[in-house]
Length: 341
Image 1 (cartoon, rainbow, N blue to C red):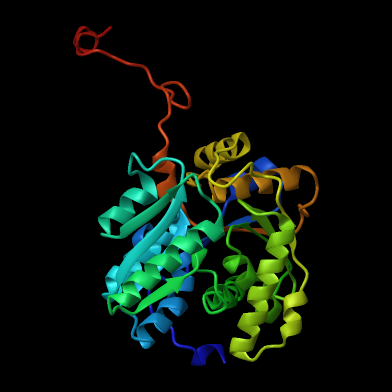
Image 2 (tube, rainbow, N blue to C red):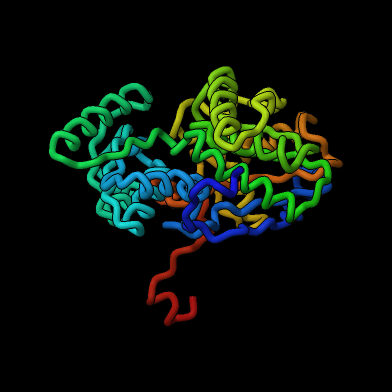
């Protein structure tokens, strides 16, 4: 029944599945593949494009004229939703939480380029606070005669989850039905839910491992399974698929959006060995998890590992490195060049 559900075309699919042989050798893995969902193409790419294809199809069909969604200050979901709404001719408004809105960098800069109206709560990363401000805005717009649509944090709904159910069908066409280990970052749980359900339907030999960037593993298990149950109802699948086993590790972050040393180091290794960019809020923490789980023998070195790259590169441009942090460069003056010294 998946094919009967309305869907827009927003992403460039299928995304590549690329070998990372140097990184595999560095870690001692027989095979490491990167599923490049950072290359979906919508507003610099990322995993949210797959969810938005389903979620925004419902918005268009329902005649909504405005989308209000929520997220952190550097939310990839907010950036990509803003771009998709502009593409579809729907107004976009964002409710964001974070520490500093004095400078607009990274995703926040792109939000403003797309003309999104923003309301924010300083230093709030609580879903409840953001949802309350979203509801207030919904009520204001409704009173003005608008028809606003409230999209939850991360676009994580049972409908949006279908994006990653389909992604696993796509992955099966790229890998076959062999035994694999799929590792991905987890925030609002929609991508994880889709991967787990999609593997249950299309990749039964896949082991799914989520690396939390914000939540406890108990919260992730609960949210993901609830999303899976809802998606199963939409497509007429057996709700027992929500009980499919998957693993979650919640010890590779200190707090949401906090840059941790292990993620910074993992990002540098990826860049220098593979020319691969990972941010330090989402994919960098998941990559740090991959490094550590390999070192500790949790990942099977002989079984192919697939790292789901969910995007997030704009966040890289929120930080300013001091000279010498990473740079290997020597300053020359024009006088030195002309004299050959």
